[in-house]
Length: 485
Image (cartoon, rainbow, N blue to C red; front, top):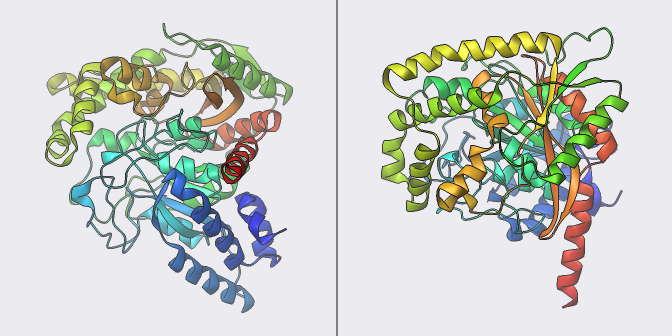
């Protein structure tokens, strides 16, 4: 393989070569860095270039391997880290100008776990202000663009991560998700992810000055965005390694018990009054057929009320945000983010006071209903969004924009409120008037069974293919066209 093509390798293929000695960690990292320098100026996905220290670490790993030190699961894999998570010696700005000089005193658990597994951080990726938009732009680092084209938002809040990994900047991209911030960028860019369930991945920022609110702690999770579902099976066992700084982490193995007989999948196209776009409908059919042909028992059946659960969950989260974050947003946020939050509070009227405590209690009712349903149907295949992904800055266009971006995304944030795992995987490449656009579906799973959701994503990917391949063809054609002008 040419040096210039190494960046195309999945993490699974890459580690097979680096661990066997067929490929050096230095060459793997150099290829990813070269790709970053080639495409990132157009995308602005990586906002802090860590090339020098990445190459130093790669050389150190190569020397250790030559001396007989055993390699680790992610040996030499180039990764990116989102700028809202602590990486020692680097700013945890969260896209906020006032936080640009908040230098992390130590690594967060996810950074430590990735590096302990042999991964090498080549850069830090963009996020919107306070990591609280489904689009990615901020006054500190500017806008991130989707590699499919500027007609599609890159998603958020892990928009830099999604754009980077799909463009070939690193094989793995770290992100996090409180209402969809792993799955929105996966859907926008045609990537694969799994939002882990509550307690699966240890989390904490050593730079933080106060503990997060109860709902932020229970709804927000750390994870990875990848180009292929197989890379989640490779990398997530390292990410979930225990860290005593997270006292609520649950140390369970990645793989659970294999069920006897075919796995039952509840299949739904219910969109609760929102229009289901024909291309999303087509993606759902493709995913259903892929699972059925792979041996899953797919039945069209309605799960428990995801609309009420999702809306109540996000309104309750907004109540906590109003209490704990609004002052910071008003003091340090741009006019854009302040205006967006004003509309958030209209779309999701915050639950406060006694009602907030009542809704926190009701969360157990929702979770119990879903737990009982998942006893019969361990997986649920549903839309992620009812429409193709929205354009950049759609959430700045008042109530209608926020309603399209977040109001319809109940399948997303309901899973955060429930604490359940949910994978997001492309199932169709739509040819729309504005250009080609990937369409992702969601696969929710039983508690602790992220592995089952990823297995199902693998089955869909086997039918549909990896979206990075047509994307790279498109990017190469665009580059060639530019050179010929």
